[in-house]
Image 1: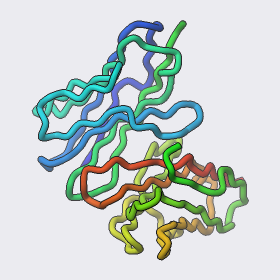
Image 2 (image 1 turned 120 degrees about the horizontal axis):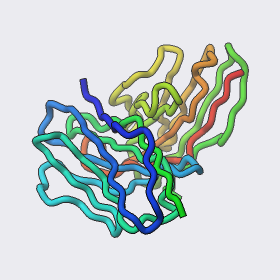
Image 3 (image 1 turned 135 degrees about the vertical axis):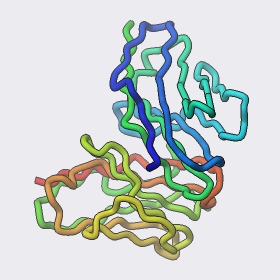
Image 4 (image 1 turned 30 degrees about the horizontal axis):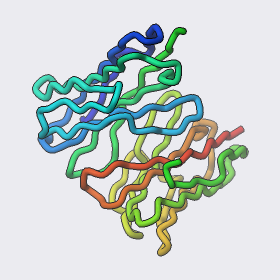
Length: 114
Length: 114
């Protein structure tokens, strides 16, 4: 079965500090794409960062970066210089080339303390 | 604003009733995906349409159906509603199917079944 596991239901970080959210996934396919989505209290799903599985270089988007370990099927998200606006649910997801839909983890609720 | 619109924003109805959720994809996007977000099941893929044709089915109940019209908007029909159908229903669109393309999510329709 294709699954995504986010082992941390809740995380907390101090403003301006760094936090890492964990994600592992399971797929038998070799061609796939990984994503982190942010869902603030407004419930809008916002793409934070994405990674193509065939690329070894870890993706970065400003304060957001990933640690992609393909052999371990791990895809963690690092948020640097955390801001109050980063407080949200974060979902890890992937999709394979053979199927277009996203498969999501259960999410991690991130709180940012001032 | 993702460019994907969903109506209505909120829907409150009773058990046994039927409702229709509407989604308008971004201009030019051919693929529409429907997802259900509930507290116990998380974010689950329901169904995908591409240019008017059904392309993939996920965990969609037989009481649920969908279609995509020639103008590419999509409707999700939920019938014989049960309390457990209460959830946030997202529509997402992407330009092409089975390719690495970001899925742009609408704001969702919150369905409450009483």
